Image (cartoon, rainbow, N blue to C red; front, side):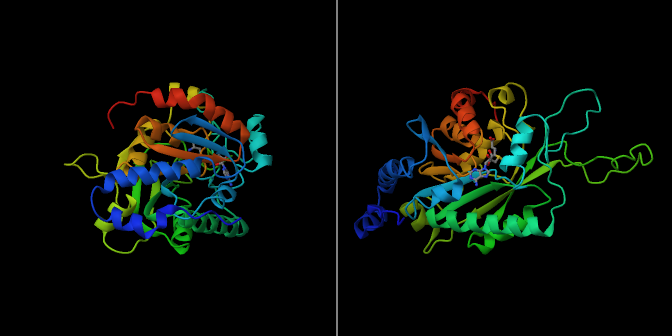
Length: 335
Ligand SMILES: C[S@@+](CC[C@H](N)C(=O)[O-])C[C@H]1O[C@@H](n2cnc3c(N)ncnc32)[C@H](O)[C@@H]1O
């Protein structure tokens, strides 16, 4: 299906947008785009609020329904192992049998949550992962406006592969955010020989999470692009303080996890900071292709942004419907 073209491309709007008051014009364009974007495609959806929508669909299939240049930023935590979230292994996880999901050792008697495995991939899996991120990159580039940012979660084992695939699809790499977070990944002694090798760990205990910062290329100056599309840069924390690329934020725990029991839930405290940075002027539409519990949508709503997400899992759609309000209302304290 060929997506409909939008009046946003008309020379008239271009002329107006390059002169003040550009901000009002950007808001007008955003509102018009939002009506198109939130209703795109035929798949079931929930309008969680007037400015947040969750669509049950495959990300790449849904992106094909959108007009070019209709989203302003993407913030997402993709399925890295690919097979963890396929139907067979995901059903095993839901039935409590784990499948490829790693159940961390219960060394202190406390029951631990299953984790994605993130272990060594076969060469066939590497090729599939590379293809997936190239396809995703190409699909996102078409719908992002020039200068639109993609902020994407990764892990130290796979970030080089996936970031390179995104660059090959046409994105510019603009840096990385390092989330300082101590997880249960790594640090284990050799399996089955723990007592024999008490001083060995097979991998470093992971204490950080990389997030790639990518941008769709644009022509002209940064100021022209900001006026015309509202994108190209990152939002400062304040006039005196730029956005910074190291953010300390512990794993999602307690009440937040009870509200949104998704196996890969990202914390609101962190998500609100990165979602905020993704729109330099605070105007535009943020998209999460792999919305899960809706944590990106809730973070966007909490800071008064407009956002849409897709996830192909009906169960997570139901979870997000219930979790959206309570996640938005969570107080996360100062960053
Ligand atoms: C790592 S999780 C994201 C969870 C999210 N960070 C949260 O806080 O809830 C990835 C999500 O992508 C979904 N998913 C996997 N493949 C997909 C696809 N092709 N299209 C849309 N969603 C997909 C899975 O169902 C899963 O919920």
